[in-house]
Image (cartoon, rainbow, N blue to C red; front, side, top):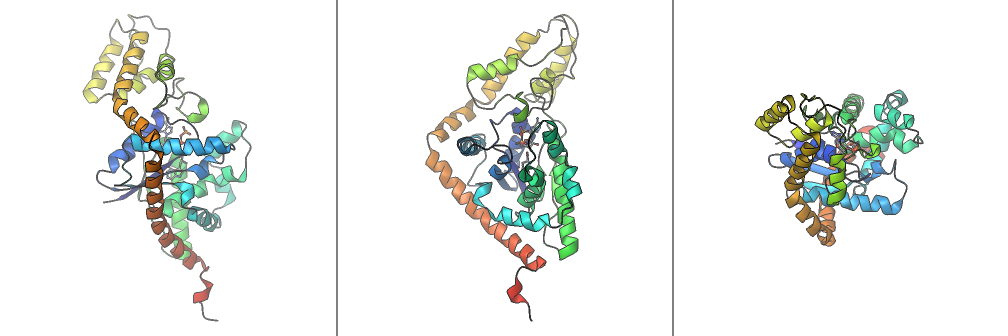
Length: 326
Ligand code: ADP
Ligand code: TRP
């Protein structure tokens, strides 16, 4: 039994990229592993400076995850800021990370390129993420491909710490799945909250339907064979098993396929798949106290693990000065 751990930012409405790239895989893992899962609201602070929005997004993300099947009794599920020990360990780890490493982080460079102000939080984001993983002894970390570099940095930090101060941290393994590592958005780029190209998991039917109908397609006529290396094909494939995917491929190669009809069909498929989750989501929205209670229990459970690792790290770095002979 391995400890599987991952987190998600409450920086906006959760979408199909989050679902297939990370959430559904985490939910599956919980059947046979020890799952640690959290909503990273400290990370979201690097881009959100509006207290209402941050607080609302945080609770909504937690409700979304539980509605989709994360079982807070079976797994350890919490809000990052309820276990503030991660901030202390971020400081400890900061002392073994060279600034050059942070300057080369692609997610940081991308955000700068998009004109975001580079606050120190955004800059040291990867150290907070390493702290999230190492402080809870995460062994397997399911993520999408965009997090690969952050995971490599985390591994380097763990190895370096252990070499410098003695064995304290577990070196985690990234878990990236080929078919879901990069879910395209409706414009064909990576689906991302920050690109405005998402299909939300929950929301109003007419808004979501509109997003499906806006998936970009080419100008091929109805009887021409169609390209499968396209967002419409890739998004549809996520809802199909192997034989369904083969069938879809055949339909793309045959005359008579209308993009418009296919989008309607895909929307129906999505809508039906998520129907039970929507019901659960509505239930949770009207039982906020239940959700808060589960999050509190999750924070208590994970706090115990964090304290253990943090204490070892403090000891290893020389902060437990009372134990030394003078
Ligand atoms: P976003 O890019 O929308 O802000 P996050 O950074 O919060 O999403 O990502 C949360 C998790 O979902 C991460 O593990 C990330 O790799 C995964 N993820 C996000 N977008 C996609 C995508 N388009 N395809 C696959 N995985 C994704
Ligand atoms: N940086 C991740 C993202 O944007 C979120 C994250 C924070 C995370 N801490 C983590 C993911 C720890 C996995 C493990 O998606």
